[in-house]
Amino acid sequence: MSKLYLNLRHFARATTLFSNTSSRAVGELHRNLHATGVKQDIFNIQDKEDFKQRVLNSDKPVLIDFHAKWCGPCKQLTPRLETALQQFKDDVHLAKVDIDENDDLAMEYMVSAVPVVFAVKGGNVADKFIGLQELDRITSFIRSLLDK
Image (cartoon, rainbow, N blue to C red; front, top):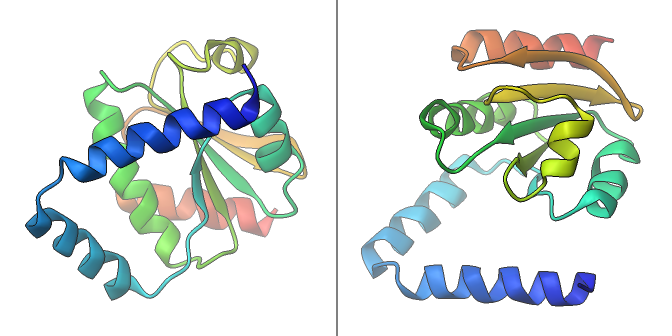
């Protein structure tokens, strides 16, 4: 499949989800996005080429959140990662990788349990943690990545 087709397919899915969302929920989302005032570079990885371009070739450190839609702890970890990233502004990116949609990347990084978060700097894995972590542990993890 071409990358354009994949992007259009994901756009169509997002548009459908958005159109099924209540106006109250959309208003709440809008308020929350503008309340932080912090630019965060958070993105979903589409395929191996996208991963290479946005993670391995990034000029900034990247956290890779390997997760699954069916994983309860993953659903709890994501907001904690996003909250921790707020204090680092745009110094670090967050790449989200769904292991069911990108099983080749999960195998390449030997992901055997989710959630697992890898810290990548200069295209190389610098650190990782497995499982649900508290906010202060995530913040220390990010600070350590930036200090390396």
